[in-house]
Image (cartoon, rainbow, N blue to C red):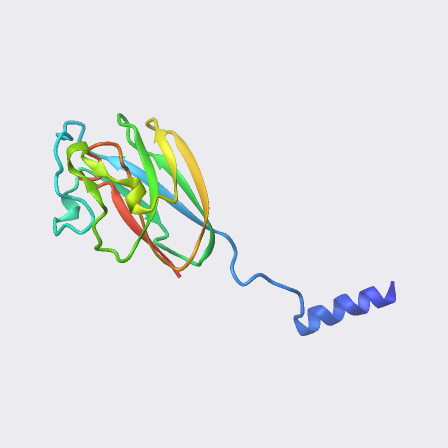
Length: 161
């Protein structure tokens, strides 16, 4: 028993306990829209890579924090819309301004070509879901791929360091 106390006391004194370098990260994601009458039949030009004023987007995704350490990352997703179904898809991107591969006649991104890493499927208004993935350093795009939603501004990026 004395040997155990000495070992624990020595570990505390000299800081030899193993402590993980990074804890798992959590990102709170909100899916929102503020215009029920948006014409989603056409691309509104609010896609990644566009030079549009995103402050005028009728839909969007907010991720907090927008930067996390590499490793296991959990996205806790809430559809804060009162009237629309939304989803969140995760894909890698080379930079914050890179365009996603787009299918014009379907008014959505090509998930397979974008490198789809996981998703929280269609969430009814007020509902929640989660996605946990192991991410390497890089930039990732979160987007809603329900037809018309991406073009209406439903995307954002997160950086993994």
